[in-house]
Image 1 (cartoon, rainbow, N blue to C red):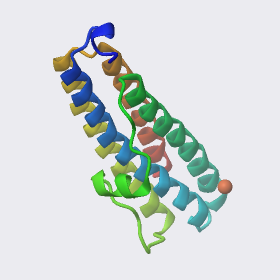
Image 2 (cartoon, rainbow, N blue to C red):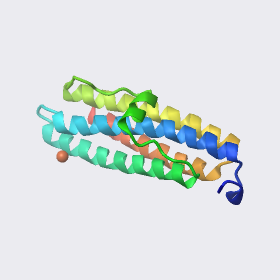
Image 3 (cartoon, protein in one colour):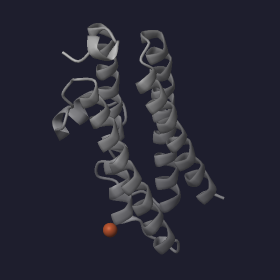
Image 4 (cartoon, rainbow, N blue to C red):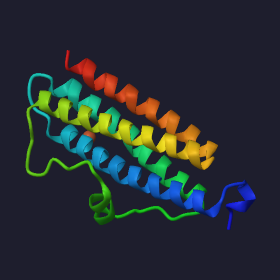
Length: 157
Ligand SMILES: [Fe+2]
């Protein structure tokens, strides 16, 4: 067991890894949705949006990987199936719809804002549990989402 060795209680690590697992499920849904919009965007802004969504899904895949590996750093296994991601996420997929480009931007923006709210709550929880490492990880992650959200807003004009 790594927890005493790194100065955290077993309970703290368990609680934090559960919170990170919940975050991971939501990160995966926004990753998939951004990928779908990269494929299916249409209209006069096709080219810039196609490239912009690619940039964002690449960053989101890196985030997904970072969150899963943070869970592993705390000594727990990460969820890693579509079934688990769908079952545990509050974000929803854009099933059966290919909205106009402007609506795609709004949907993704709202998802990033929801994830920022999730992370903010988890930052407070890691402070209370004394997990400075995950706290720092989540503060950085929140800034990455805030930047992605800004870019989505900027595209809306
Ligand atoms: Fe592509």
